[in-house]
Length: 260
Ligand code: ZN
Figure 1 (cartoon, rainbow, N blue to C red):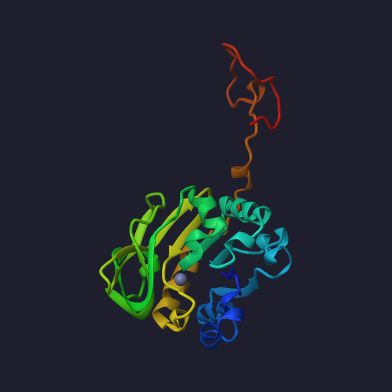
Figure 2: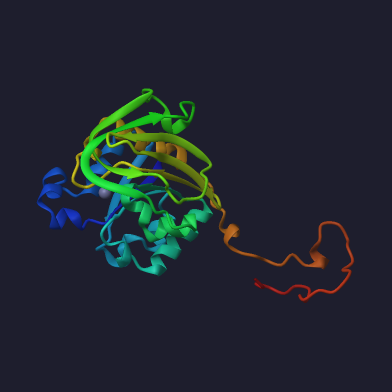
């Protein structure tokens, strides 16, 4: 089994901010990719906003099992056409892992259908992530909690739909709490939101964060494709499994295609 994983990086802060460039000299996307390489199930590629079609052509998505998304400053620069293409691929069964400020990305909002807003504070405070679902595959091998010495605070309320599962709850030194690891299923696609990863702190050099991401890629992988989940075909009376006769009024002619 090989899980073809693509790390998508916005790749903007690295070019504008000296601190970020020092922590991530090869770009955040390449450091995230490095964290995945110790898992022999995972093959990893990277791409960025600056590539044609943001590096997310139909062909690339066709060859991607799990997409990882880090964006912040340039959410608005991602084309709506690409967002729809990615959403459609998720509904067909591609896994997606949205990181940190990706909570406000077009793709995450599209998949959630809600504002995805939260409270935040940038003070480099300690984050303690509690594992609240220790039996979950994403929590495999983790201690009861782990800490990141410097992180941006995200606080509740986080205006996302009630998740399928909550894996982590974060506590911050300033007193707030946040649901920092959430799963969803959208169509046939597995979705994981993971909170840590502010660009001016070395979060993606942390080995425990690496373990969470490797676990999440394995969890999100769905080898099957369900393109039919994106269509609404008529299954007419004369094609019914058992013979039936149409009763009452119907707007649709038998055999009509593509009415939605
Ligand atoms: Zn941030």
